[in-house]
Structures are given as structure tokens and as C-alpha cells.
Length: 170
Length: 393
Image (cartoon, rainbow over the protein chains, first blue to last red):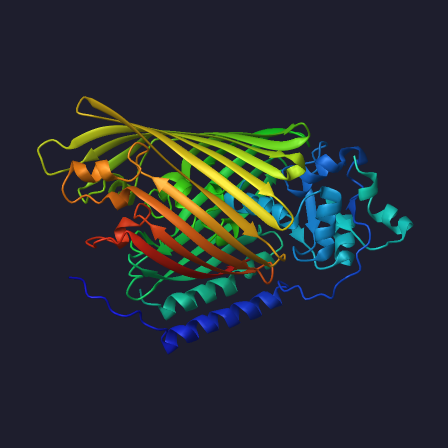
């Protein structure tokens, strides 16, 4: 006959170990910019922006979906694709996903995770804010990202060669 | 199972060191995930002596990739999973592959992967060991055989794959065809398949994979068809003069579908197996199946809840196991099926953190890990409560 002991409760040591792990990891993640505690930004029309090395004729809504899921690794001229995005929980990211790509952040995340954890593709680089987004897209050949804030059109034209707005889809 | 402090500190130290390579300008990016879980059961054991003491389980994955040429990608991942008696937490190579795009257009591509590659199967097989990228703390057993000891067969193998992406009516789709080199399966798989403790050698003599994944209606729907062809040569040393030899051929089909809405995600996958066994000049055939339906509700980007009903059968012609039990003394019909009702939640306060919990009420012992329940009288009705904390980097 099997003797069953009552379930054993959490010992103090075990509890402290778990608590320790949580605290250490939380602090560690904070130092790497993993916590997104930014104030709610004002969201205007989201637009895809690309480095001037990207040929505008490559960009339309259908290719944008392939590019942002990183199904496409190189532009047709052979330049590697570099994708920049904001944090998953950022509402500007959500606005770009729904308004321009016609998808949801959780679907993009799943596609990137599949690339990452099966080794079959690349993942985007997450930037902290739109200023960094603009800077990185301007500085990186083959780069693509997005902006929602109003930006001086002349400045944008010089630094990001391609601008794709939701209003001009297809 | 005891919670060992030394493992905890080893984990913290590893994590603290991980960002260092990233600081070097030329080092390839390093990503990964780790998760610690705890479970309590009533009725049977799951992942260790969970019924009496509760059991902890953990997983650790780290990967890196390098773009060698614009079309040539090298990537590798190691993984360790500690979950009960069947999975001791040994570090193993999960994938290590070279991926070359022969054709690379924005709307379609075609390429080749060689090395240790992930086997495409269902929506989730290629990412099943990372809690952030599977449909819950547990995988649906009916399709993914979690707990049955077949994981190593399914997960990744040495071989080659052809793949391609394409557009069908402007909707993205992809296909993969895979070939796996002949290899010897591990002992755990032998025990799981034969169901005895006799020394068992299994050679995987044939292993082919095929998959087609397709988006529909602007990505609102997603479907998948997967096929595996597995041929096994089995030799069981029963202590007699000549070992017991048999060969098993299995055709496994999986149909997958997903309906993706802003706050809801409905997923279903159905598996069908056709098996043929030949030993000592006799042939027999059988078929089994299973499937699940899962509805996830996402009231916010951080929080989600799900309900899942998962069912699997060992024999389509004997779903309640009565014929099996009547054939020989001491057989339990409850081992021939599993009905698993699950409620779960996931909370992702940031991109890096995930907190998971789920409760299972199960009827049938089909999906129980054998290694955790040796010499136990199994309870046909059992419950499982799991919590897991995950961190990704």
C-alpha cells in the first residue's frame, strides 16, 4: 500500500532563493533597458521609413509584411535588410502594426520568436525611442523602421530616403 | 525534487556574464531564455515526485547567429531542460546549421539548410522548448507528445532541408522539405516506445519531413499541413538467444489552423498516425490520433488567459482501451487515452519577463511520463497545477 505524505509547504530557504532570483533578474533587466516605462506618447499617422539605399519601388504593403516579419533577409539588390522596431508594448508599435502592416504585435513577435528559436531567420533590433529609430535608420544601409511623430519633411527626406504612409498603401 | 541553491547561483552567474560578449563590437548577438517552473499533482507524478513534494523543472536556451554573407546565415542554439526523471537537464545542441538562400526575392525565396536542423511539425515544434514561444507551460500532448518520451525524435535531427517562401494571392506562405540522416535513438525513446525495461536499440532508418504554412485573409487566418515519415528498426534484448527484432513505419499527418483576432486567438491542431509493424514475418497495422482546441483571450498586450481541451488515443479502433485491457492480465485501459482540460494564464509585464500558470484536469494516463511513475499504480483521474517564471535576453 502506498503511503501518501501531505504536500510539503515552501521552506524558508526555497522561498528566499526564488525571491532572490526574481529581484536579481529584475534589476539586471532594468539595467539593460528591458523595462519600458515611458509615458504614453502622442500617436499620429504611422509611416514606414527606410535608409536612402533602399529602392522605393521595393516598398509596398505586401513586401512590408515580409520585411517586418524578416521573411526577407536581403533587398533585391543584395543589400542586407535591417529592421528597427520599438518595444512590443509601445502603442506606437501597435499603431504601425495595425495601420500599416495590417497585423498585430503578438503575431509579429511570434514570427520573430520562430526565427530566433528555430534559427531560420533574423530578428529586428529594438530601439528605445523614435529619435534613436530615425538615427539608426539614417545610419544603417538597408535599414527600415517607422515613425509616428510629426517630423520636418525636409529633414526626413534627407535622412530617410523612403517614407511609406498608411494612406498611400498598395 | 530538492531545490539546489548551487544551480540557482550558477544560473545567476551565467546570466550576469552573458551580456559581456555583446559588448564586443564584432561578437555575434546572443539571445536566449530561461525559465523555472514548479508543479503540484494529485493522483500521479509529473516531472518528478510531484505528488508528494511538488517538483521543480527548468529550461535554459541560448543561441547566436551570424550573417556570413548576405545570403548565408549560420546559427546555433544549445538547450538544457530538467523535468523529472526523463529529462535530467543535460546541455544539448538544439540546432547548428548553415542556411543558404539560393533565390532571394522580396516575394519569394528558395534555400537550403544543412546541419542539425529543427524538424518542422505543427505550428510549435520548432520552438517547443522556450516557454515564450509555445502555447502554454505544457505543449498539447495530443500532437506534440510531451511527456511520452518521444521528444528527442521530434525535436531536431542531423540532416538537410529545402525551403521556400512564396505568395499565394498576395498572402505569404512557406514550405519545407526535410531529410534526416540515419541515427540511433536514445534509451529514453526505446523505453517509451517498447514500454519495457529490456535493453532496446532503435535505429531511425528513415525520417522525412514536409510542411506547408499559409496565411489567409490578410493574416487573419493561418493554416498548416505537416507530414512526417518515420521508419524504425527496433531490437529488444529480452534475454533469449536471439533478440526480438521488428521494424516500424509511421506516417504522421498534422492539420493546423489558427484564427487571429485583435484580442482572441483560436488554435486547433489535429494529428493522425498510420503505423505498420512487422516482426518475425508478421505484419500488423494500427492507427491513432489526437487533437486540441485552444482559445486564448488577450484583454491587454501583457495579459492573456486560455482554455484548452486536448485529447489523444492510442488506437482509433479501441478508443476506450477496453479491447486492449481484455487482451492480457494487468493491462489498464486508462493508459490508452488522455482527456486534458486546461485553464491557463500568461502575464508579460515587459518584453523580457513572463509569468505563467495553468491547471489541468486529466482523465486517462496516456500522456504521463513513464519514467516518473515507475512501479506506481496510476490514477485515471489526476490533476496538475503548474507555475513558471520566464526571462528572455
